[in-house]
Image (cartoon, rainbow, N blue to C red; front, side, top):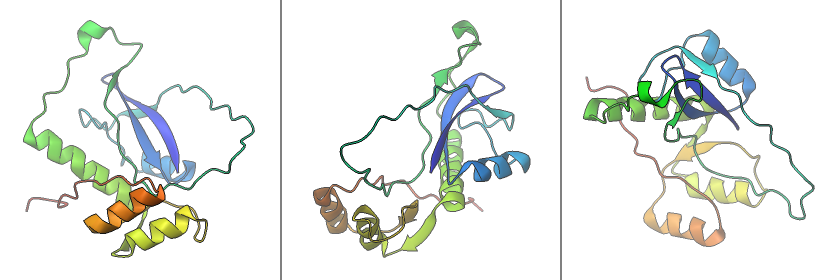
Length: 162
């Protein structure tokens, strides 16, 4: 998974998670990206600080989390006075949740009811590291937390209200 800091034409900044840089490029070329705050399709990569990794004493643990957008931040090139927060309405919220669902479906593998087992296999290095999503019970979630597996439950909304 790769995380990009994104910025829209209206000055909103947010994170976008993608399977790899090619997935981001393809979505951008097909005009399938939009601002997580205002919905404008005019989205570009924002400048990001490089990640500098020093030697590790422990191997990196694979994560079984799903991509999500983070809260907006002010864009440094747009004066704060011109940035008005988007009002939170049921329509805006549903739109954002549908966008999250679309990103998850595009960039992660649906493992259905095998989510807990597959997340545990990834965590133990028994399965390839990748983004997954699916269903789990409350007891399975407790088991994953006890094992130290990071999971992020997301509200799974319908694709449309029709």
